[in-house]
Length: 345
Image (tube, rainbow, N blue to C red; front, side, top):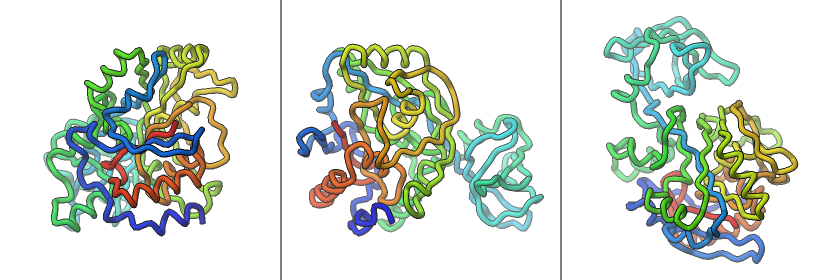
């Protein structure tokens, strides 16, 4: 099994139950690939590592409150996680348990949905009685936090969901609704820190990748056996042009997060030219992959059997990442979505 040694680390006590306040007060581990050295810093100092003319690429997708609760005809309560609309705005693929084809689920306030069947990925298909259910989600839905955060909170006597989740399980630059998981590497940025980078001459570039449940679908074997579920990504003309100019000038592209990286790598050709466009991508990056689009990676500390850990290991080398995780455990870094930051140069 891949990454088996990571699973032996005692990470549960290090799971971050809430984000750092303020955002940029998180710790940051900096890995230098050229010298094979590691620094321990604070995220707010990240601007020191950028040079004028470099680019920072961030994912401006926005998480919506996609976790809903409904009652079955029998009266039983069922949790429903909206994944994506399918053939039209009324029909959604969802993740749920204990359902039967043909039954109608009652979400309250007049919203109902009929179970039509399931997808090849074992998602249920629901047909709602309203064209636009996002206002209902905003009013009644919960933020779709990873289960390990909810579990860690309950273990500490906290509520699984808290009021601040709608603000804090989101980047400050989130703009376009569509994700059921956040691009968490960007949690640490504040408007002031982004402005400091701009003032230094760094290009802030935006891409959009709506994050689905495939991002946190665990590996069940070797990486080459894993099938990544497709997600919708977009690179606009302005971002593509800036990145191509940055590379032509010999400057660096910093990618914030694995979602930004998968998007850039999906839209960049073998000649290191990034092309504008919008498409579904199921690119899965694991050790052995040759990067075409990025020079530096900002990320978090990831689950041992996760696809993001595969990507960071592909970028820095699995041995170096494991060395970093050993130091993170020793120094009690905070792990996972609400945890501390890692930057690989």
